[in-house]
Image (cartoon, rainbow, N blue to C red; front, top):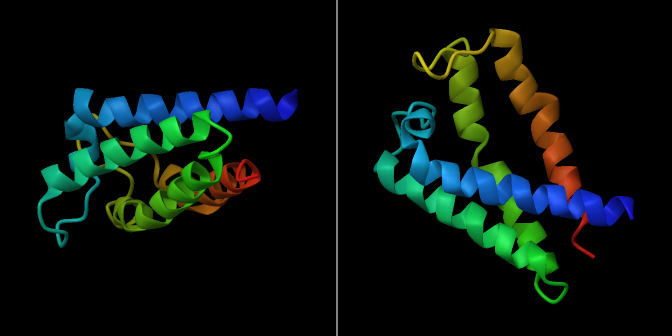
Length: 122
């Protein structure tokens, strides 16, 4: 029962996050490091990937691939978290967290999210 609830929460999280990339792109654009080209494309691609992961997690036959996609995305998002740390947590007026919060987003939150997705691969 706990695993089913956990899976449902994971699906809701990534579905919501994916939609949010299209609904509120400014927040995501502000955390994309400037050395990466085409930030708008990166933002929308991340949104599509998160929605795809949520859909793949829905079905037992594709759940493993959804879990792997979540893990891959979380690893791919690490440069954004490092950039946020470099900026002291304040990326814009909308995105401003304490520096320690930026560190928490990278360590341990990323690890927890990766392990959460990994748990649902079977």
